[in-house]
Image (cartoon, rainbow, N blue to C red; front, side):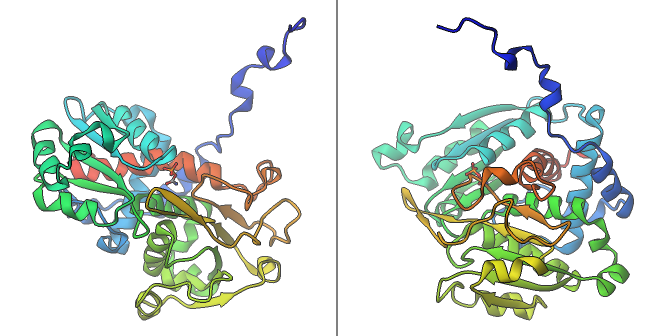
Length: 351
Ligand code: CP
């Protein structure tokens, strides 16, 4: 039996808020002149791969996200009357809830499926047939499925846009948009060609690009800002970290890639440290690189930021949370605004 008031109940919750204020998204906005033209091409399109985006589209989506982040009054509920079908056939905390939060903040309504077994799929119904029905029930589908082909099967039947929220080990383009939004807020100068040429950054990726959809999509976006990146150091103990043709595609686009195995030897030279340790495969997940761990004691370069798509495992110690290296919470927070921006572009409601 508790006999005293728990001190946490006397503390105003605002004092716990870990928001970084508006300075960083404002600085990003000021660095990028507004140009909505590249965004017009995203209207009424499916979003399945990071490969679909041009550099200009990436930059302008991030600019629009920064407007949503800094101007809550801008949200005039443009999606009123529109319905999102949020279909997550694989577990999710951030992607589903941030998509749904984004849609709600834009004024729309949501139908959510969190278990394929509650739909006709349990009776053998094809994804093609399910998608045909969805055309009549909503205005946009967000799909997560462990089967990498599911999003393409639905695409064949859909006449409304579909957004890939993670398809097996293939891609997770909107997570990578959130990653890029965090990177641009941290260093808006990355978008200035002169600064890039003088002070390119070094990015460390602890993960397996051939098996991790978040890393695959992130690398595809990084190739769009290759001039601002001295090198991407892939830290892995996997002997074949790339899928077929993946490394060649990235290098052809100008990204300098180097593989390394000793994390602590690389950390003092890394400006951005991206870590992920799991890959969803079928109904379960694989763990990779269990010997790689980041903590407060890791030898970070001063000012370096740590990104993680989350959920976290033992690779990311909680003692990092209270350090300036923690940008993974800001990354997850920004996911709402970047998804608001993307949804607005697809439904053409940003003007
Ligand atoms: N980053 C990410 O995809 O997290 P969830 O699995 O919680 O959606």
